Image (cartoon, rainbow, N blue to C red; front, top):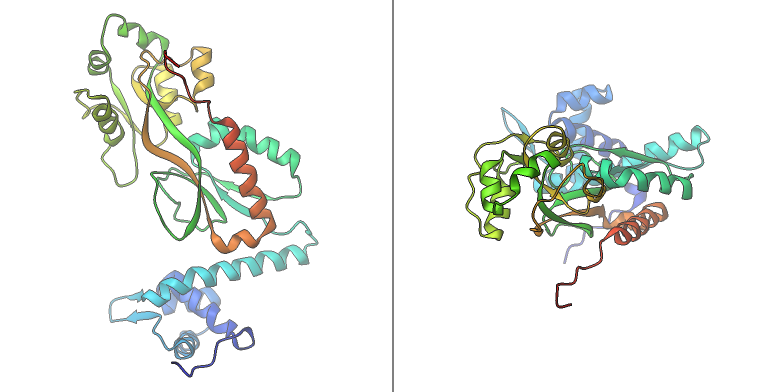
Length: 315
């Protein structure tokens, strides 16, 4: 059994934690010293003192580079988050912004444009006192930047965050009404073989991954190597509506475009491809009433948008 005393808040070395964060973010004592406008020797002393307090190395130091140890990787995001929260709250108090800090929410671009913006309007009307900073970038999975809450386009996965399924994707080949004319008298396989397939690029995956998965599930043999590739589904949809090509679109997300005739689903060949939109947040943030409320609100709103299950002919 260890005879070390428990570290408590009376002993928290705030200067050392600031120094550790600056060095960890820059992976450089020189860069960290420059960020805080202190000497490199002072940074080294602070980090060394923190390592002594913890009894663990936070960095691996060699001649060519500085890297975080496992302990450093665990500590850095916690320190950054706590310092961010302190900074934001103190600025809000100083500036008499009693509504508190802004909550950072990431939403993928296609979901933002197709479904989330109308929701955001309603949320603002219901909760004008909650300040949201909404960011949007093409990303599969979690964005690289820090956030309070993120909606991630991904397959189911397990990590250390609280995860809620908001929207399961159901896809089918979609195209313009003009392109759909060539489907008359053709099977789905024949139609897809004769048209340009539009791809959605996923981070670190082959450009035709989603089409390959769709064709495999439907038992179709169609070449997928050609065709344009886009960073977002909304871009592929806009191209398909104004030019040629067929893309795999979420039939529920693009329900209005299908109802208006701007997009056509020539074949009733809808599948779930395993991807969905998941709300991700840190478990300790559930103690924040605003974050907990937003989470419940989003789950409820997306749940209300989910289509009713379809009955088959015998149902």
